[in-house]
Image 1 (tube, rainbow, N blue to C red):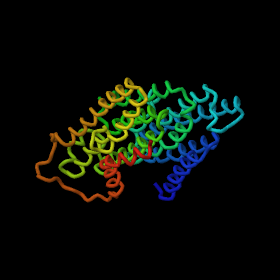
Image 2: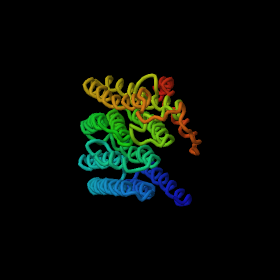
Image 3: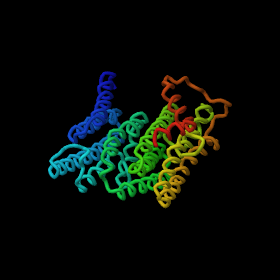
Length: 348
């Protein structure tokens, strides 16, 4: 892609998200979401591959549907209350429609069906943008409108997303689909705690972005998209294999890695709110996700691929990819757990 075109598209992505962040008026927020969608579509379709075009079409249709629902709900709210302000969502029908549309935008279950299919058709860097940056603007709107939404609906969305994210990833062999289901499960953790402690939602979103970035950038560095190619990484780059296994365990939420921190604090907060059953379901759903991360770790570090070469070290070509983003995101994805007391001070 032409670097000037790429620069325009990436700056439009940034502009759309910033517009939504800064808005308190529904029309401006809607405009930001639309700019965001239109800016990522050329990035998704840039390879002109039938799978990429199909993924782009699916993405466009779901995002357009969600944007139309947001426009319809905010118009309904303005018609009833006389205001376009986000903080005045007094009509329950409008607020339920808004949260449903935003759930469709970020891929919360049961509106998640587009997510694995779309991510599977994209290259890894566009998939990374879709899994991280594209979640920010809808999440800003969800956080602003969550207090007007029925708590039962948010809890149902959260529990269903963690269960679907765990179940869905169990029988996958494509790494991008596994990361898509992982994303759905993490979104569930963020939504479940939103009505009680929005700061923990932001913490979970931040850690999720760094862990997912580390996972995607690792796969990009090793040019891997399937489990059976994972088995051949260890002989080419043993250090990267070690850190990748740790990043996957961090995504699963095992101590002493960064991913344990948001899950620990969220379960603690749910227990404080007298919701032991919800907390138990969430903890058990996390085990489902942990299973497929362990499966990846096992394939990567404990199995030898049947088609290995006879030489002790295979031919290694020097990569031209920048390793700084990968190093940074991996370090953050592995080592932030000791920061928990400082983060507790900020969230309470």
